[in-house]
Amino acid sequence: MLCIIRQETDPYFNIAAEEYVLKHFREDCFMLWRNEPCIIVGKHQNTLAEINAEYVKEKNIKVVRRLSGGGAVFHDLGNLNFTFVANIEPGNNLVDFHKFTMPILEVLKKLDINAEFAGRNDLVIDGRKFSGNAEHVFGHRVLHHGTLLFSSVMSDLSSALNVDPSKFTDKAVKSVRSRVTNISEHLRQPLTVMEFRDLIMKHIIDSTPGAEVYNFSQDDIESITKLRDEKYATHDWNYDVSPAYTYTRKLKTAGGHIEVALVVENGVIKHARFYGDYFHIHDPAEIESALVGARHNEQEMRERFAKFPLKEYFLNITEQELLSTLL
Image 1 (spheres, rainbow, N blue to C red):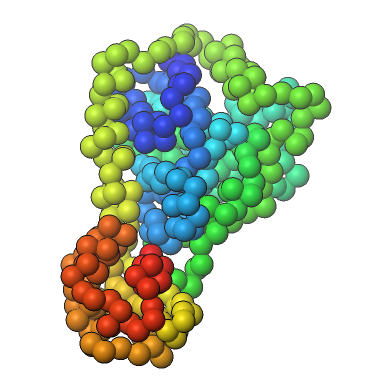
Image 2 (cartoon, rainbow, N blue to C red; image 1 turned 120 degrees about the vertical axis):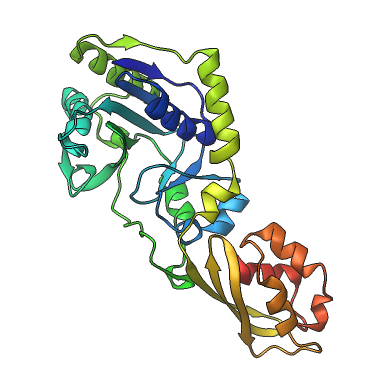
């Protein structure tokens, strides 16, 4: 087994690295890594329905879609991530959450923390979740990855994922929010997240025959960076592959109440309609028509709006207020 400690904290790079190792390495691999503040959404989720878009924009939090299914999770530097990539013989059970989480439980037991596996794919301490896990199968290789909340800022986690569920109607997989805890809260003796990382890596190396430390080569880094730039850092991958959805939002303004309803497919607006008790000079139906075909993001909304004197379509309602209803 190749054991890889990654120093990069760029979530686009780190998620790309998982796909690269899964598809281009032949050996079993184990990786430990951290991300700067970001939200990682599941492969089959509607991104906008999982994030607090206003908070994400204000805090400059990156949003990245991963290969595996499951729900959205918040990462920061107080969260440690682990990844197993393993070869599986045909006919064997490709999805085995217990197998890949057992080493984590063994390390915590050494620290006198009574952690256990719970539900479909979680690790908990006293019923409170500190690790969510997901898997992705590619041929006869499986990628298993999980979060380890060690000293994360819980208020940031809550704020970043605090989306209004009434805004979206779709068939995407929804995240289930759980009571969570940091591992550091349960330690008998103080430990840093980096010291915790090193304990896990030592345990894996000591308990796995033939395990060896591996560092990405320059060729590896260049290939991962290319995948990062062409896939994982793109709006198309992170937002536009979301399932079709309808979006509604209401807002009270000085010009009256305004409500928008959108139908979005593959990130593109197929239908738009404004409602409310606002006044207008020109019919807003012209703007509704102009929004059809635009991608559901701020840049394209502004580009479509630029063609109209908005104050004549929505009296006493600002462009920023209109954007707030649309995003």
